[in-house]
Image (cartoon, rainbow, N blue to C red; front, side, top):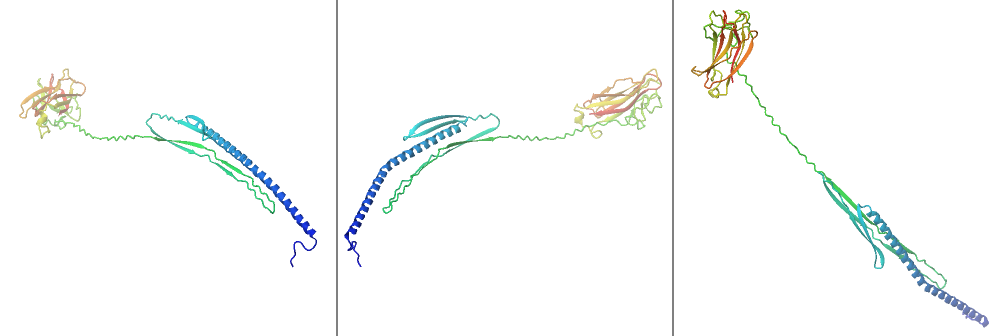
Length: 375
C-alpha cells in the first residue's frame, strides 16, 4: 500500500512538517554560512600566521648561524694561539647579503737546528679538517579537514625543526722530526808484523890451545929460550898459586939475566878457524888479547910479564908486531885485556908470552888463562 507524504488526514499537520523542515534547513544554512565566514576569517588570518612563522624561522636560523660563527671564531683563536708565532687577520663582510666571516691565518714556525755532527731531517705534515655548517629546516603545513554531516575541525600545529651544525675548523699540525745519527765507525786494523830478529851473538872462540897450562905439558907452546919457562902449581915459588885450576905458566929458573918466552902460532885462514881471505883483508877485524898476571913480591926486585903479537903472511913473512906494556901486580892476580887492528894480509898470528927477569935465581913472573880472539 502506497502512503503519500501527505495523507488524507488533515493537511495542516503536513504543512507543519514542511514548515518545520524549512526552518531546520534555514538554521542549518545559517550555521553553514556562519561557519564559512568563520573559516574564511581563519583562512585570511593563516597567511599572517605563516608570515610570522617564516620570520621567526629566519630569526632562529640567523641567530644559530651567528652563534656558530662566533663559536668558530673562538675555536679558531684558541687553536691558532697554540702556534709559536701566529697572526690572525679577521675580516667581517657580507656574502650574498648573509653575514659571513673570513679567517686568514698565517703561521710561522721556526725550528732551530743545532749545528752538531747529527743530521736532523724535519718533515712537517699539516692536516686541516673543515666541518661545513648545515642548516636543515622542516616545515609542516597546517591542514584543516571539514566533514558536512558532523562538524569536525582538525588543526595540525606547525612544527618547525631547525638543525644547526656548527662549523668547526680543526688544524692539526704534526711535526715529525727524524733524527739520523751517523755514527762513523773507524776500524783501524793494526797489523802488527812481528819480526823475530834472531841476533846470534857469536862468542868468538879462544884460538889458543892449552891457554892455562892445565894440560900439564908445554905443548903446543914453543919455548923460545934462552931460559926455559915452566908449568908450575906453586912448588917453584910458594908465593905464586894458580889463578884458575891447578897450574899456571912460570918464567923459569935462571942464573943469568936472560928472559924466557913461550910462543903459539895460530893459522886463521879457512879450515883451521874459518876466516876467509876477504874477511881477513877487509880491515874490519880486530885482535883481542886477555890474560891474568902476577909478579912475585918475595924479593927486593920485581920480575914482570907481558904479551907480544906478530902478524904474518901465509908464508910466515912478518907484517907487523905489537906488545902489551909491562905492569907490576905484586899482591893478586890481575886481569888485563887489549885490542889491536888485524893487519891486512894476516894469515898467522904468533902469540908470545914474555917473562922478564929483574934479578935473582928465578924469573918470578906468572901468567894464567891466556886468550886470543879475532872478530
